[in-house]
Length: 338
Image (cartoon, rainbow, N blue to C red; front, side, top):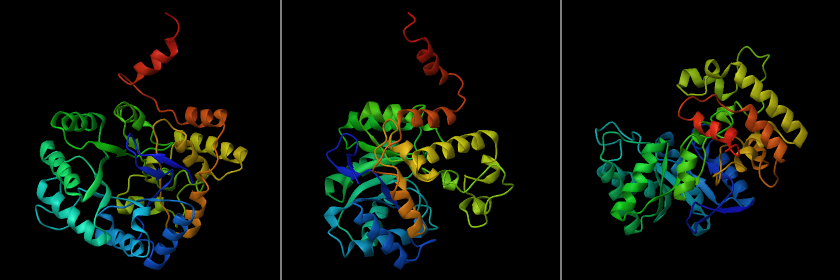
């Protein structure tokens, strides 16, 4: 596995990050250890979790696994923001919740420091100065090495970066957004901000909850019972059957399957490889409930789609945009006419 610098930092991370949301939820501790071992065998050094994943169970499993490893060999990322209790201060990005959150995460992970500490989403109720100054303090204290953001809008990310620059505080070094062939709106502003400001991009849900895994075809009238999509409605997940059962999705999947066959790879490997070759992307976050899924996802690295294959996928997944995001498209069409 190759390594890439995380944004403009000197920190090198593997080109595939292992997401651990399923650990302690769909995947028991023993199988979780096997998945982590296999990922490490392939050279993976970047592990992403969050305090809210099964109320800390994911962090605990990662922590137990780390006890038998050389801690400094791994870049461990976790997040804070969402409810971890029933109290009024058990949620959000206040100084109180962040400090409590980082201490609890350190305890569950069994480590003295967190390599990458990310705010899991924007908090409209807490002043941004309070959040960013607290994160700055954590870096100064040595509890956190780098800070990042997840699920921010373009203006929110830019505002945070500008405020940190103004105050001389530690700046976000990366963004963790949703980004995949079925979610290209990330390109409208977020990728530009990251490129302009030197942030790495570590996309979550590269297979859009399974839609890009190769399990779905246009002749289906409902999702397979063993798929994540089958329980999306019940659990409140965003990748529901009703939301994606449309011509746009099926036309994209037709193209994905055709390109995958031509490349001699699975649809999932092809979809992730498209991300690996996308502008600004550092390391897609791959998840796995089983060893079989992990092996399949690991196969997305170490090769590259051709320019034509990348173009076919990009064209098929292009979203309709209206003003002001169509201005870039207009500029591209008129370039060179002046």
